[in-house]
Amino acid sequence: MNLPAPSTQEEVAHVLDVLAFGEIEIEGRLVDASNVALLGQLELDGIRTRVIYKPVQGERSLWDFPDGTLAAREAAAFELSAVGGWNLVPPTVLREGPLGPGSVQLWVDAVEGATQSLVRVVTPAELAPGWLPVFEAQLADGTAVVVAHADLPELASAAVFDVVISTWSSTMRTARAPIWCWTSPARYGGLITASAVTSCPSCAPCCGDGWASRYQRPNWPGWMPSQDG
Image (cartoon, rainbow, N blue to C red; front, side, top):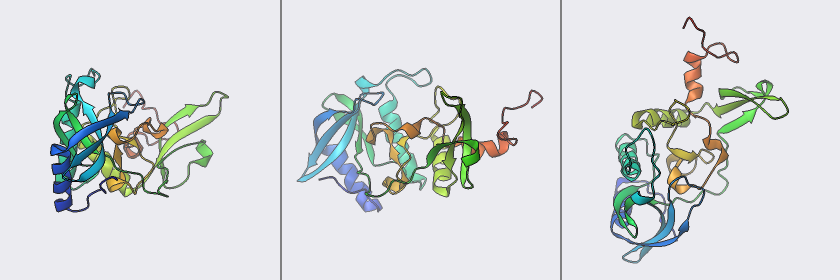
């Protein structure tokens, strides 16, 4: 049985206590994660819940961040999300675990029936109102497509949070939200962080770039900036 996602400050404080002091029993590894992400059960005073444990020693080096800082950054992302009122990141703590220090985050189950897609790949003609283009692409057969995301206030708020915590993608030179799955707005505050989801094809595009295109790419679909600025 998992603890439900907390909805009040008192519930958040209780969950943080369980995460910080409970005993972790590792069940297995999420093999699709880029860093070592371990699924486990945590128990304290008769309370048992599922968590994701990411030991520092299992982190991959990044060119744009100091080594061994991912766990601390994930815990900091939760704190900032809570203090700023976004409430997008499940409760996360930095603590000792079976494999040394790391981040421990509450596992949040998907809500049944919450399957709204926030990222789509469509042809230019299929780009409907309420969807913002991110970039153009071409399929193997030469078909032109557009990667787009939904124009929703919740998603815009998440994009702002992304910029605030500076979760820069090392491959796209634009801000990318600290999540792996945008498909279920009914999950924790609307979003689930990378440590709670194994993989999702909708993590590839930058989900804040559609709003930026309103200012940087006024001539969509011919959006490439001109040489004269």
